[in-house]
Image: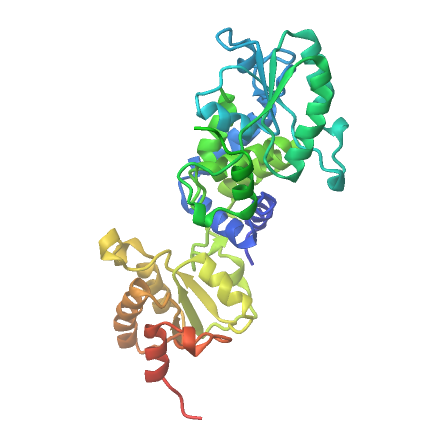
Length: 200
Length: 200
């Protein structure tokens, strides 16, 4: 009994991750009640994003420059050309960037090794990473993949590839999160924090 | 450092209820990674909904018929013209419809009385309800507003208006939800269930 256009919008919204049928309906009703500019603005942004945003040909970050042109990270002359930080995804890159602690270059793999899901080295931007490392004078590669099974496997794989190239390969420190509580830390984190303890 | 088009999409998504900055970013990345048809389809549905869907001139449900034409609920000749169910919103109407227990007509108020939020009788479709009740031969009005403070106030207000018109005014039963557990029922619900107990 609901209008077809509304049903279609609910179905489209429910395709998004973390949005079920009920949430999709709630969002659709909100969009109907709100001034039409809200829905129109969202529709325009969606179209713009798929039309304009593409991957940087060098580091595979997002960019909206001309096809083939490198992104802002790659063209920024104030960044350090000696350190390359390898991340799984764009969100990881942005999280690192928010710390304002890293001023080197990035390389986005767009995933992590996961044989179970059929993701091998060829599905990631690893070949492009190797070509890039051969062409440029990087001294250190920070492997900033996630501290989970897939991320660790990817880090191990990359270390074996990159060490023989004479590069310093490092990994983000693992241990207790800042502001955390020993009592509530999980076993694996606490064990890692213990084995990787530092001299003071 | 993220493309402007992406920032705009994140900002637009974050305007939706229940979607914060982080979720908006996650959704935007998903839309970028997915085939572009997902974003384009969503954009089209959004435009269609605001272009086509409007309120029925009689019951204020949603419809996409011609301007001025009544909706499917109002034109369905198999529905009972003697019973009118008054609800706060479209979602309530659809919830009732899913029970398949009600075959009368609907009237959507589009809100509930809430002096604190500045919503008085004039902000709801109450005048239209009165005109409709004078013009048609309804025998019973089911006041199906929510069982919360605003819904109860609206029900009381409507009862005072409609009873003098010689109509039977009823309210949805309140008590323990089916499948519920006495032990976990809140005080107010349990008190209501007790005072409204039925003879067996």
